[in-house]
Image 1: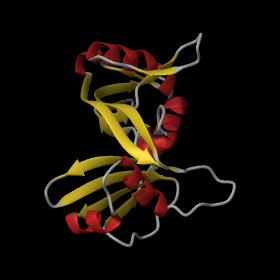
Image 2 (image 1 turned 90 degrees about the vertical axis):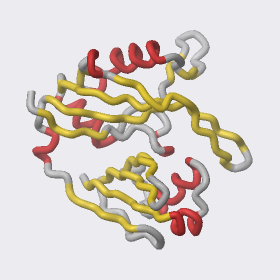
Image 3 (image 1 turned 180 degrees about the vertical axis):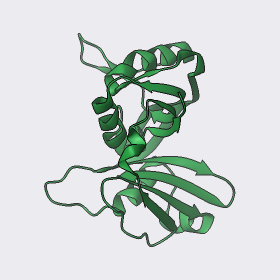
Length: 196
């Protein structure tokens, strides 16, 4: 796996026409030319920035091509990075649930509901969260126009500590992402090893 950071200046952002989540989506997809028969093999998240730069973190199975605008720094992630038991984490998700009767997908709303939802879902992703450290921030929506249609997606950023309970599922979650709308900047599990 390869971790990359794309740094875009205000000038780069203007030249690329970045104004919403869909324009970021197009920029990131341009770094990974389509390979016939191959599914998307990268994740990304917009880390925001300051007055001078915007940063987008990318995790991929292959090296992204050099961008026309911006600075791209990449490095390989050593396999041992995924062998720890405890990690600090941050993840931006599109929190939803599917109604069993109607099969309709609805957004999870409210801070407590979001915390409970994530805590219950975590074991399926190969880890348990440390409840007393779990926080949810940036609760809101992202909207953009795609092919003349307004797309609205709920968003929330979860931050805390996790304990790996199923290594295989955890590695899969890290490499493939978690949840819905991964092609629009959701689901990238950002982790840092911690001493138990």
